[in-house]
Image (cartoon, rainbow, N blue to C red; front, side, top):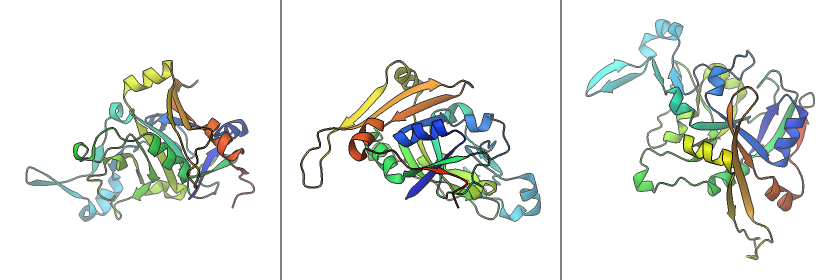
Length: 252
């Protein structure tokens, strides 16, 4: 599937097109202030608005604890916990309505994130990971409101950050995410982590280069933490070209 990464800056677009991706601490999108689609106070929660609850009280989900039922208006993940998620946000459509101030879009394919997931497997064995957590994940965002409740994530805990209110549905967001500890963040800030595997052509012969991903961490000029995924060396060896960059005036 083709995805579109929107950006305001052609220099940044060219960096992404080379195969370098910056995943930001998820809490950035709670803390930033904008009116064009990046900021979301409900990130990492399932929350229904007061007007929804007042107008449609029978549509509020029912939860229970120890056999006692109650209506669940809002469930939020702790910010400290959310800060362990680093996300890279894209769209499944090349429409400038997704993010209002962007002039460029980089075409990416979901197979890039399939590769990341293979290089970054969840360390827990399936029998020890019944919650369904993932070190690295990617997928489409699910949109919800009082009439369309989010699907259950039982056994798929990695989807806990793939839900957003329907006000954002025009973005058709697709995201990739990595869930790490503070210790990992600090470590790869001092010395980048290299994930590398030998690969073969379809006839079974080995390539003379490896599949290689380099991850390092940092803090940008605004104080937001990020992970940088760099697969540019492998991309250059394999395809000898950058990803396509679109000018949104040409997008439809």
